Length: 245
Image 1 (cartoon, rainbow, N blue to C red):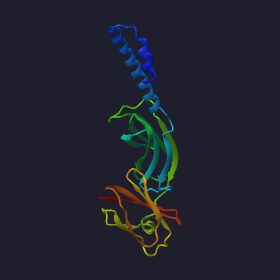
Image 2 (image 1 turned 30 degrees about the horizontal axis):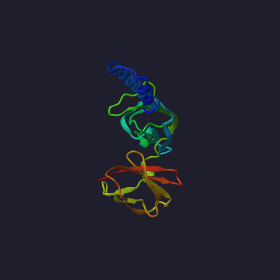
Image 3 (image 1 turned 90 degrees about the vertical axis):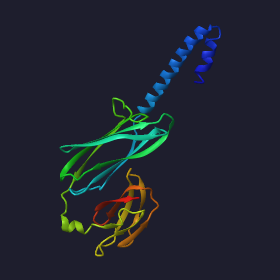
Image 4 (image 1 turned 120 degrees about the vertical axis):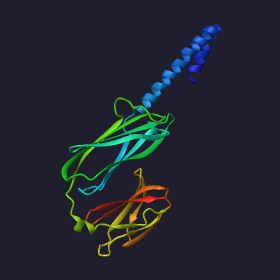
């Protein structure tokens, strides 16, 4: 704006009021087109995906799979508009659409893709497509996705109820106000670590399970959280959901 204004003043010095009005409309049109081009350039930037993790790393046919995709946008706000997951044979296609603000800054968020238990197979192919538009909701994305990723993974046959029960754990009360206990069977060698994520896949807390009954007293906002226990000896991962009110 500051670049165009001196040129506009210079060009209209010798004009009549009517000519100035016509030039003003042209001037505003140039500003609007320039603004739209800047927004288009901003939203079309690639490499919005900064990191990806999957839990459990080695799923079996009983596991619900969580794919956490870290995203970064060059705007002050980034709001999830809609997302979907579709399974066709061994192909998993996930897509998300975000609506972005106009002001330039950095907005970081995590997209959580939930995949229900899958039949055992050597290869599944996961494809993720990210599209963006401009606020307000709902927004209209561009024709071409802004970013994408793909990887493959395998799903093992479940180890069975008896063997798997060794690695189960209790969690109560559920729901809770952020104070709860995790119970491990006394005959299990204590080599577990824990990771707590919120419903957006963001890291809340992690550490080592120090006893077969471990108490958590967390200051959490109301919502759904995931408590993930991992065994160093077996490489096993178990995820439980807890509601905080």
